[in-house]
Image (cartoon, rainbow, N blue to C red; front, side, top):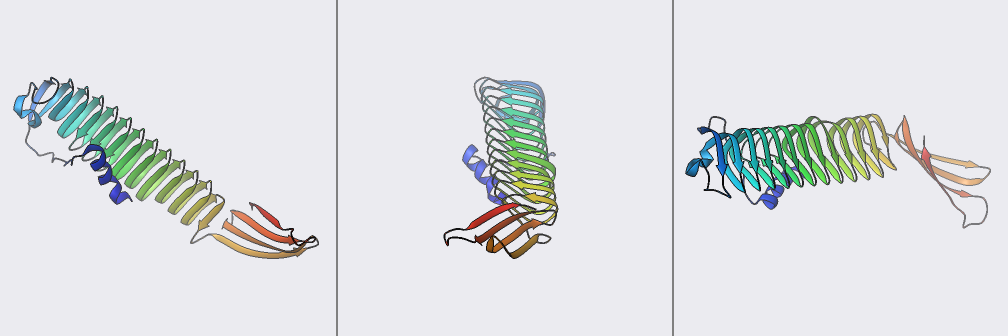
Amino acid sequence: MKKILTPILIFLLLGQTLQAQEDSTAYERSPFQFTFLFPPLSTNGAKKSQIVNDVSLNLLVGVSGGVESFELGGFINIDKYYVNGFQLAGFGNTVGGAVSGAQLAGFYNVNGSALDGFQGSGFVNVAGAEVKGAQVAGFVNVAGDSLEGFQGAGFINASGTTKKGAQVAGFGNVAGKGTTNFQGAGFFNVAEEVEGAQLAGFINVAGKVKGFQGAGFLNVCDSIDGVPLAFISVVKQNGYRKIGFTASEVQYANLSFKLGVRQLYTIYSFGKPFGPGSRWMFGGGLG
């Protein structure tokens, strides 16, 4: 899933391919540039995409080599190399390389390389490589490589790997390799390793868990050093599974099944009491 999510989002939402630029790429410097409406109506002229500006102001759409301090665009900012500082756009920010600082936009932020700082948008944030900091979006956040920080989205968060981080989403979170400290989602969470907690309205899936798994319906993990809590909790390696059969003065027979871990497990029971043949007993609880 994580292998296809990033390119699909970039293709559908932006319709263009971003290529990160090497820091050694030759470019010129300018203290200030202003673009009237859209290129080529720029104070930097035809060389606009080869010039890194300290301050860049774009009335509608602007194209520059990069930014070293501040950029403001009425609609879209496009920077070929990198951004160091603060970037603000009414609709979207697009950076071919790394961003160190902050990107704020009404709809989208995209950078082709690492993010060291903050991305905030109304719809989507995409960082092509490592994220150190935070991504907050109304719909989706994507960290193409690793996450070391926070992702918060109205729908879904995805990261290739995690070092230390937290993901909170209205629908789902996906973390690839590495350690995730916290995942909270309305429907599902997926992580390789959790050191903290996974909370979901429906399902949690993880490899190794050190902490707590809580779901409205189903928890699945390879192993856990802690406790899972859900209607069904499946722990593959060190889980607790036990079948019991009893009879008493009020029941012909009762069959029970315990599932979870020894510290906390769910009990399901089914039995036939004395009396008419149509009477049956069902039960459930924690132990």
